[in-house]
Every structure is written in structure tokens, then in C-alpha cells.
Image (tube, rainbow, N blue to C red; front, side, top):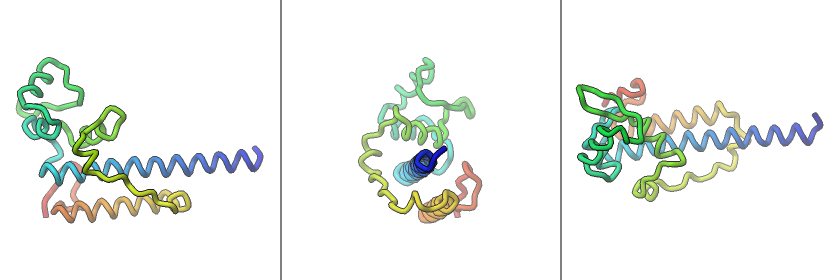
Length: 152
């Protein structure tokens, strides 16, 4: 492999790392926005609140679930369907997801010019620190286990 091929492979790897970091940041940002905007206090969202988030009536949502046409994975707790917030965030951040209000409320993440020059471990630490600050600012203990959302 010559120097040009090595430089191209290295450049593609850095772009890939930066792209993954931006995707992670978008997911964290979307999750924090959902928690704050809809006052979510659990990792699981019931039909009434999910209907508000998706902009449909609860009866329509129940109908989709009953007919097996609901597009998102859900679990049954005490005979009630609930959606994990992480599944909702994945759907939103995926190619098929679209919340008009969420798109308007979440500004584009600013590019970090030095992101390609820093090691991925440093970016990961910065993301974790930003998430901890965001959780603490809305009253959630950042040391709690994912999914438990224990209040301070």
C-alpha cells in the first residue's frame, strides 16, 4: 500500500469516526429534548403520552397496536403497551423518523473543526460529560443506571 492509499484510508476512518460521533450526539440531543419537552420520567412511554409525542389520538394508536400495524417495537406491561424511549429515539434519528416539532426544536449540531484531529476516546469522554451535565440540569441523577432515570 503506498502513502496515498494509506492517507486515504486514514482520512476515511477519521470521517467515519466523526460521523459516528455526530450520530451519537444527535441521539443524545433528541433523547434529552424528548425528556424535557414531554416531561418523561421513565424509560418507557405509555400510549397516552406516546400519542401526544407522535401527534395521533390514543385510540388510533391503540388500533394500530391491536391490528399489528404499529411501526415501532413495544413491550407489554400489565396488559398495556409501552415503548422504550431508546426505540423512539432510534426511530426518530433513523431515515424514516420525522417529528416536525422535534426537527424545528433541535438545532443542527455545529461542526467541530478539530473533531478529526482528536482521539475518539476524548470525544467519548466529552460526550459523556455533556450528557451528565444535561441530565443533572433536568434533575436526573447522571450516575443512575440507564433506563432507571432516578431523580436527585
